[in-house]
Amino acid sequence: MSTRAVKAIAVALIGFAAAGAAFAKGSEDSSGKAAAKAPVVVKFFNGKAETVEWMEALIARYNAENPGIRVEQEFQKDASNVIKLKFASGDYPDLTTVYGQDYVDHGLYLDLSGEARWWDRINPAIREMCTDIRSGKQYRIATNMTMAGLFYNKALFAELGLKEAKTWDEFAANLRAIRKAKPDVAPLFMGGKDAWMLGHFVEFMAHGVIKQKYGTLASRKAFLENDQTKLDFGAAGGSMESFARRMIQLRDEGLVNADIVTATYGDQIAAFASGKAAMISQGMWALGGILEANPAMKDIGFAAYPPVIDGMKPVILSAEDSGYCVVSKGKHPEEAKAFLDYLFKAGNQLAYSEFLKSPSAFRDVSPDWGIVKAEVQKAVKEAVNIGFTTEGPAGFSGDDAGRLVQGLFAGQFAKPGDFAVEYKANWDRAWKAPK
Image 1 (cartoon, rainbow, N blue to C red):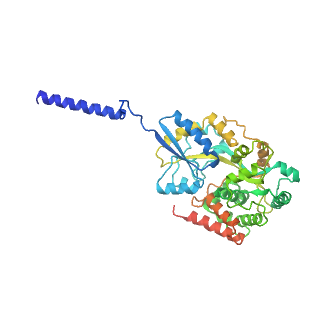
Image 2: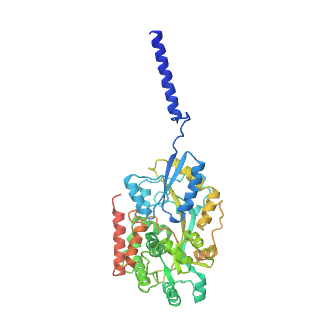
Image 3: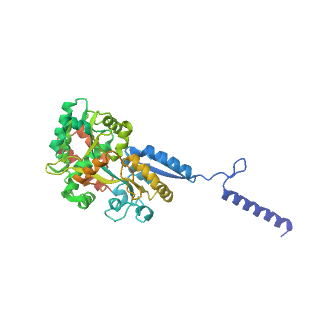
């Protein structure tokens, strides 16, 4: 080979090496500086309405401190149904607050059981609530404990000489007394346009019958296996028909706001904060919004849900809250976990819990979670404690149940039994759907 040919080959090799180095360092702009590598985008699908703005501020701080990762939050009011569409179309988020048994069964969430750096800080009772009954593993991690019941205006109750109801008849009598004495005040105000709120009514008052009868473990198994000998959804005098009968009573006697089907969550919060509603059904997550709307409102009571079947006890939700799942088919599971590391820092969780007015699940976080703390602790002690219904079929979500209740208040069901039959048909259809 000639000297000229050897030199030509050497020049070519040097050129290839230089090109490879430039490629490895990234492209250069016109000034000759290497362009920054595009950050990894972590998609966070959030269905928790009251936390969106707080979370957006936290995400902005995280993104500024971690230029290699950019978290993008998407919020949907009807999150439980929207995520079904996302999963079906292959549009997988990396992280979500939406949890469903079917999604666990189909392997759509990562097993978080081994994340000791998180679980070692968390109350063991919360870990138990996050445990999948089939596998004994944890596919979500919850940062808070929450309670849901009936917020009520204590000053108004004192003025009218009313006491917390232990039975349905006492509850209805209280509402009638409020309607008579204060015609411009809604005795019970519900923001039914946001279907999840009416879905919670089903969870706490109708499903609450089953949870009270059979206890936590047996009721979870009944929901998981669609054991209608316990669920009795379509049965005459069962949990669902009894619930429907009570709701029709509230509607027909004018004990709820007339615009229940069109009023929103925001309308409900505003009505209670302004004194235009005597009672609302909500969880601790709503307290921050109430106090933001009316910082001077201090005289707030908190009571359990009255039983929809005579002879049973009042119930109160006492359960895990603010749960997060890492999606197994998301593109960036490790980066999603890195964001959770940041979210779970003690300082961030203190701020979150105090914003949400909710007890923290982390043992190293001690928030001042609100003016109703004593009221809530009293209600939890006196009532039957129940959890969320997480073992139901994903094809029939709390939002779907809430839409049936919308129909109930709108007069679409002639009899309570018609509602019960329709509810069971929807539940069964979703439970039998191809997996």
